[in-house]
Structures are given as C-alpha cells and as structure tokens.
Length: 174
Image 1: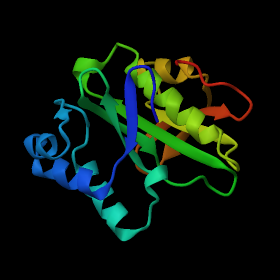
Image 2 (image 1 turned 90 degrees about the vertical axis):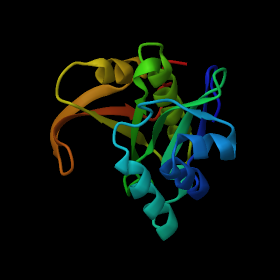
Image 3 (image 1 turned 30 degrees about the horizontal axis):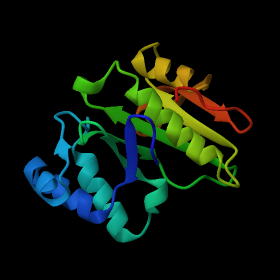
Image 4 (image 1 turned 180 degrees about the horizontal axis):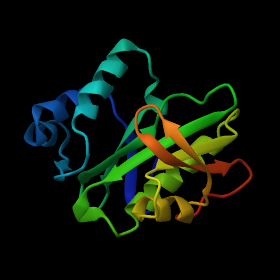
C-alpha cells in the first residue's frame, strides 16, 4: 500500500529475521535504514516471526512495515490483529518512531489500513483501541473518521476505549 509519504509493506519472515539480527543486518539486506524507536515493544518482532512461521496468520492480515519513502527508512510497524471476525470486524494497530511523530504519518498509515480493510468484501467495520484518555492516538483515530463507541476491558491491555469505523464512510487523513 502506498500513500503520499509512506509505503506499507507486509512483514515477511525474512524481514523479521533481519530485524531480529539488528538494524545493520536489515539495512544490508534491504537497503533501508531502521529508525530508533520504530517499534515500542521489540518482542513483537519475535512474536510476529513465530506467528508467520506457524502459518496461523495471513501476512495480509498481520504486521506491516511503515516505510518513509523520501528517507528510505523504517519508521514504524502497523497492521491488523488477524483476519476479520465472523461479524466482519478487524482491528488495527500502529506505532511511529518518536522522531517521526507529529507529522501526520500515524494518521496517514492508520487511514490507509482502514481504507484497505473496509474495501474488502465481508469487512463491515474496523476497530482501534486506545488508552482510556484523550491523547495523540485518539486524535489520530478521530482524524481517520473513527468514533469512540465503548470503554472495554481488553484481555491484553486492560481498560481501553474502542474506536470504530463502519463501512460506508471514507477514512480521513489522506
């Protein structure tokens, strides 16, 4: 997926293996700089690698590298938390390196993920979760056309706000 400033490319096994080996290994293999802080939880790389190797996830419905086109740099990770469920709902997540925050890249990436999902047959809604307070992430999701619909207890993250984008709307931010 390509936007004005970004490329969102599905993480493949070889990408994740090189990221585990370090920024220089990744740059040597793919010619792309790795920006400090591109991922908040580095353990997600190993987790994603194991999921892809197991065949339990489809790369199109999993992690994407967020690449800054002009800088030829990996600036974040985003994607989907699995295939859409039986109700046609899929959840997105994303993160951008601190040096690239506040420039609209999170909104650009999230909007792209939303629009990609919502244009696939059978997807009726896209969810995102944030901490239960107004912050930068809530602003991103609002700019993308999402509405806060509930406060829930997430099994992994505890109390969160659920944001939703329903089919029939156009995600903003692009």
